[in-house]
Image (cartoon, rainbow, N blue to C red; front, side):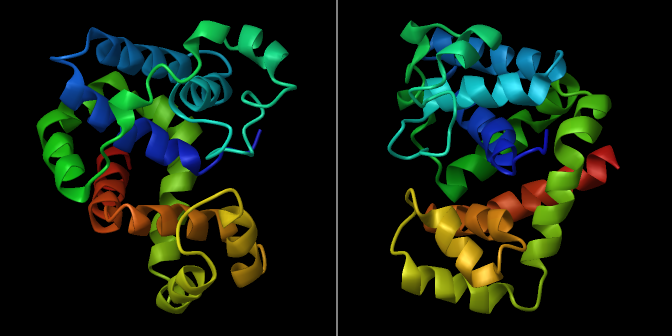
Length: 202
């Protein structure tokens, strides 16, 4: 299965946010452990992505998610999820500011590196990290981002479609990813984290 770029945000940015809340919410610690365990096990990418989508997003803001759709009941069982898990971590993951992510990343990155082995990085994240770094370094990046902002005032169900129209469907996932990070005002911090990931594992 082709690995989706959303997992970059899911695994490293969202985990950092969760760790911030761990001292106040024991469920946050469990979220981190579960996501890492699913990512490192058989069918890791699929199960971890479904876990994140089902427990931390909604149908409205993640309309392409199979596990959240009316056809996704079988996927729940396959990935070890229960109906009661739906949306349970949304409050934990709400703050994605650049300053917060930077602070949390610096405080927790060594632990995250230990929890996420090189083999898992190679299998799940390497190609995606590289593609995101390369896309942001594209000379056309600035103009494509401006077009996105003209056509879409904020991220939504049509973000991927709009990005596809701008890129000709070549790099549309990367543009969508960076557009969301730009909207959240954490794009510069995320870019530095991605470069650090690449340097650490490669």
